[in-house]
Length: 287
Image (cartoon, rainbow, N blue to C red):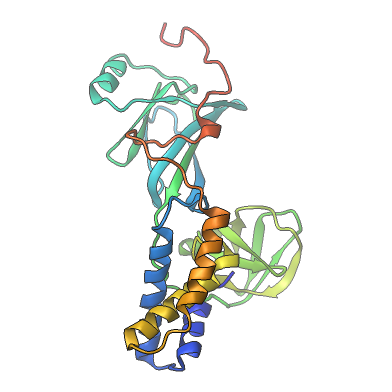
C-alpha cells in the first residue's frame, strides 16, 4: 500500500521538482489519475458492506455517507438473514404503508431522499441493517499521521494508542500494524480505534502510521503515481517514458479485478449472492 503522502512525494522525486508549486500539481494529478482509474469500471474493490442498528419504531435510515450506489440491502434479526423486496413505485409503497405495521422482519424497502425506508417498521433495536454499497471516490487530501504509538493483540480489532489523538475523520484510512495495513472501521476515542478485520500479528508500541489511500488494491498503488507522472511529462511536452509503464499496470489491474456488476433500472443493483432470501418469511405478519 502507498499512502497519499508517499504518492505525491514519489511524483516530486521522479519529476525532480520539490517546489511547493509542483507539490500542489502532484496532488492534483494523483487525484485526477485515481479518479480516472476508478471511473473506468464498476470495480468490485469499490464495494463495501456498511451496517447500523435499527431504532425501535423508526422507519427510515440514511444511506451511508460514502454511498454512490446501493447494490444490496438485507437485515439480520435473531440470527436470521432477510432480503426484503425493493419497491420502486411510490404509489405501491404508499399502498403498502396504508396500514402501520411493526416487526423485526423486514419484508419491503424503498430508497428515496437518500434514505432507506423499511416495512414493517422495526419494532426493536435488535435488527442489524446491511447496506451493500459502491463507495464514492473522494479526493485524497491528508498527509500521514505519525504521532504516538499503537498496540494491538493478534486476532483482535481494537487498536490502543499512546500519545495519539485519533479523530472520527480517520475512519476509512489505514493504520499500519505489524507491517500490514488495516482499514479503520470505527473511531472510539483519541486513544482507541477499531479496524475492519482482526489483526494477523500483534503490535506493541509501534510508531503510529495512519495513511489515506486509494480504494485501488495496494499492489497496484504504484500505477497511480506512474500515471500521474506520465500526465506530467505530457503536460510539459517532454519525452514520456512512463505512459507504457502505466498502461502495463492498467492491463494487469483489469485482468485481475475488472469484473464489475451490471447496471439495472432499479435503485438497487442486486448481486447474485444476495438476490434470494435464505429464510422463509413467517406468514400472517399483517393480521
